[in-house]
Length: 344
Image (tube, rainbow, N blue to C red; front, top):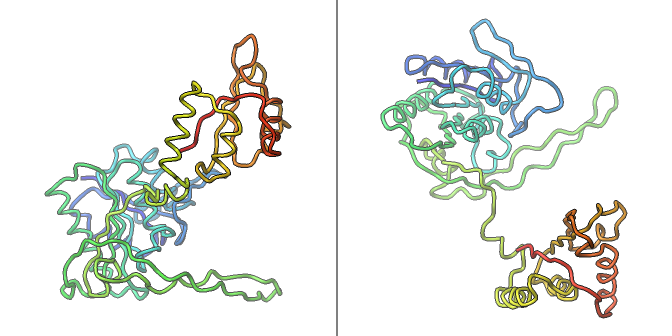
């Protein structure tokens, strides 16, 4: 078994060294980590400069980039064979609730997951780091489980380990992410050179920390195992965002269909104004490209997609469409129809 290790605390951090030692007997371990502490780097990739990879005296490779850079480089260019698993950590400090959005530790595991490799982020839930060996043993336990029962699909697992002796753990719990209160205000200060600078405020305290959450499990000295996903779509708010009125939309759709796919510009604007459509998309077919100063580009609530068509005459006229939009907004009768595609 091949395991790639990374982190956001840097290749010199004690957590990754202890983790590598704990896993050495189970698998072939490769370490590719940032050259310095990149906590809070989230999922950022370095795109504005080249990256370099160096090797330390203990064999760890370090990159002058982010945790995501490290995993991306390792998987797509450095390693001769793909790893069977990626483990990020051991992070000094919890990554629970909203922390996962900012965490470089979680981001390194996320990059592995996006590249199709089972990935685990491991964090020691304290700032004192008294029991790294507990988190290392938990990581080893998980690897052994995966070896006995190989995963059928990539998984992204966020693991938070209480900072207690392994024997004091109260077990493992599969959890969901909790929520924190909003972060503390930024701290304004002045440098010796009289420059005003700011420190980002501390993370907020736990807000949603009831049974079933990662906060609750760790507070009870249980290891929190939270499966994560990358689909950030808020499914329940899709109808709210689009202001959907199913009955009216069906009526509008029938009207569009009856006109052979064309809609009078007045109907388009009425649907927008009434809130039945959040946005309208116009397909405009021209024999020549739309001019950069076309009045169509500035129409509120409407996105224009220009098409160049090999036609003897344009199917629509840019000038006529723009004129009709203005006529309807003034309450006058439109003069033509346009190709219409509703954005819903």
